[in-house]
Length: 168
Image (cartoon, rainbow, N blue to C red; front, side):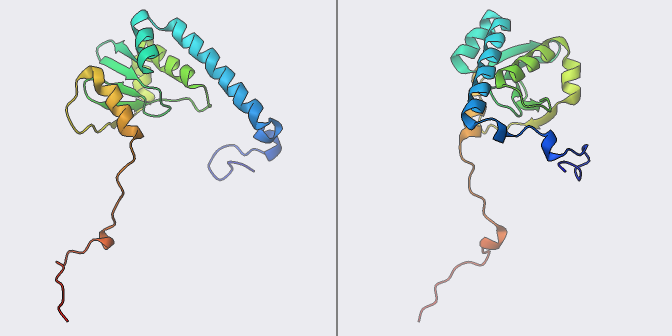
């Protein structure tokens, strides 16, 4: 049984189509083909300015009525970035879909039903250490996410007692 303890309907292992039935190469090719089709559709539905941004930077801006400008970044989580506040929003479907389809779905929701988008989206504040202009904010967020996080130190590893060398 899969998912029975998590409050989801229980499935039998034979009901789930596993990757064992599809060779890894074929699965990769199928996903790559799906992403290519999704990207083609996304490019067709972007306006010229959005298409230019997407082809140059990999992300594009969407103007949302009464809320301002949002950047849709090429990530699967927290990829809708508010240009004015730096808040990131995450609203993704339960199914795994190509990234370009996700970006298109978010664009269409923001343009046509922003209330619906924000009613289901999770929000977090993206921390950028120095002030940046609106145009370079998406690039800074993507760079900050790719950089390794600083190592964490446990309080038990930090001594509050000053070190004094003992002489023999």
